[in-house]
Length: 203
Image (cartoon, rainbow, N blue to C red; front, side, top):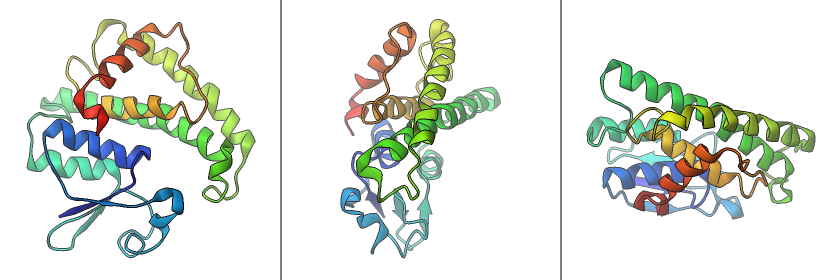
């Protein structure tokens, strides 16, 4: 088994943080995304989309997409449960994972990819207006999230989950996207600080 990894890029990092929370060590194959190595071999033949991360199992089976990879390891190593427990717990984690992915991480990614000069070769065509349009979308969602976090510790309830991992990395990604968490979102800032203090955040 080996994991083709893209360093500080958000989606590869999601898997590494997940594995760290599980206490699992998977051999990494570093790929220099800055040099566009993810568009070449050995990644290109393993993922037609030429994106990371890519997990290759011992028998050669390939799994791509960060959350799919995380779900694979959750099934193999169910404790600690990072996708929730019971029907309601699992549904709540799925709901908040999806909300954070679509309403925060995707908006931050769009801002970064369509505005940052370093992404000109990645995002073709690069549309700065679309990048700027996504900044207020991210801020709007942070205000919603702040209200939700007023009475609970984690994104989906009282237990740390994959939704928190997505949230942590989305907010960290706001810095290169040049978006700031509003000062009035104190609950979001408290939550992000707590997530950042976990040893897994350094993975």
